[in-house]
Length: 120
Image: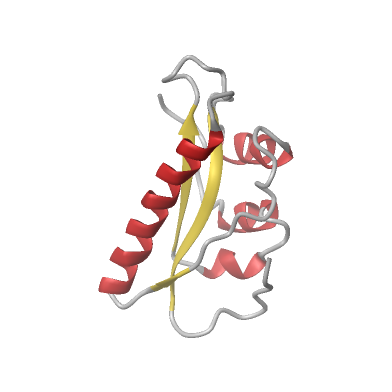
């Protein structure tokens, strides 16, 4: 599967995260997504297992960032609804197929305190 999105999409991604524009300053943004085409369930599989697996992936990203003395954060604002409006925004921004369901956005590379971050 290939995506045709090109260019720097960090600001658009940050805006899709409910206006968490501080995330656009991160050198790297990882998006953890579930590919609903693999299980043939169309995105209706029990979310607990999928989200637990995604949480493990996020944990590994943050542990590796820490090992490199980089900071990172988890942004899920805008992705609260499974197959919701957040998914549609990411499909458009990144030219993703509808089978990919974004679960977490993980900006990595900030040094120090992240400005203007808001608690969930």
